[in-house]
Amino acid sequence: MVRKRSSSHLLFLPLPFTLLSLATVVILALLAIGCGEEGREGAPSESDPGALRDTSHDPSPDAASALPEETAAVLELETTYPEGFSFLNGVRERSDGSLLAADPLAQLLLRIDLNAATTDTLGRVGPGPQEYKQPDQVFPLPGDSSLLVDLGKAQLMVINPDGSFREGLSMMVPREGGFPEILHPRFVDAAGNLYHQASRARSGGPADSAAVTRFSRSSSTFDTVATIWLPENSQVRTQRFGFLPRMLEPRDDWAVGPDGRVAVIRAEDFSVEWTLAGGRKVLGPPHEFETWSVTREDKEAQMAEMRNSAISSVSMTSRSGGIQSLSMSRGIPNSGDGPGVDDFEWASTFPAFRNDRTLISPRGEAWVERWVPVGSDSRWEVFDDEGIWSGSVVLPPRHQILGFGRSRQGAEVAYLTWADEYDLKWLERYRIIR
Image (tube, rainbow, N blue to C red):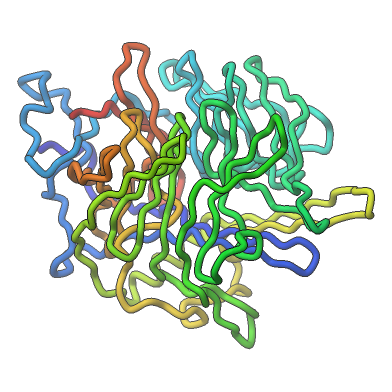
């Protein structure tokens, strides 16, 4: 199988964790992402099936006919944008094939045409109605509108199809008891409902669980669509840095498809539990998986990812009760003042899968990214709408899937980034070959 690039490029995948604090309450979410170690015994190698490929020299256009039995798909390169980006947290595919994306490190909102290799900047940094302070991610809304998460203003701004902005809603949504809920969406369905993971205090359940909630923009109401398991004691108190998260602890992950179906990936047995739009649940069987020991090199690689994706933002919002402050940060400081490897408590082995990385494909499958040692190929396990494992997709270590879409001809596509030795992110589109 032909590789698109050699392994001479080093990838730093984004490894953020988000800290939200309102007054004296701190809401901590860890997006722990790592890479693998090349040549380690038992680690996946670049000869594994399902990797990225350049099929321009294949003798037959039917690339899927040669797929090994345990390969869910391969990805065929269609185009690469000719310039790198500081950081991309995701992409939003529009009906004309162009993309909207936020580069939070460069503080830019971008409209990208991969076919024409052009990029326009929408809006600018500032306090005005057509401005933003810290653009972080863009999601689709009905009618080819989009939703911009602006951490700097603590606002969810609506982007019109022509690229202009209109007023959205605050990320601080009033709840019972007078204390607001921090609405930081991870997914948006085709009806425009927002999905986010509520804090433990808001979930109302056991200390080792949290609710996945759906927020209706039309009625400004929340309802719970799933419950996920989290470690009960996920933080450790340190003398120098206060509370720090325990690193690489297993926990459930989740994702939502355009039709509102929710997939929960259970950490206990690596099974997939679907909750359909009407509330019916479909429970998939357990999935066997291999794990690897966490080495010092793995820890240092993860710390590097956290530093390379670090941002910090403080928002001030005027309410009837006075001024409220919302502070958000991702990653750790890039200076020598932040915590180091030895300041964290680490798991001895990798969990089965990464958190906050599961995606739903155009076919309605759950693509779940595995944890692997530094230097190893990235591996995604694909599960169908019954929770049955369909096979694996193996990617080089320096590549990350940002999202999915469809070409004008209706073919499934995936949007990926890879990072060079300067940690610039290069955006590419691939056709998914089954």
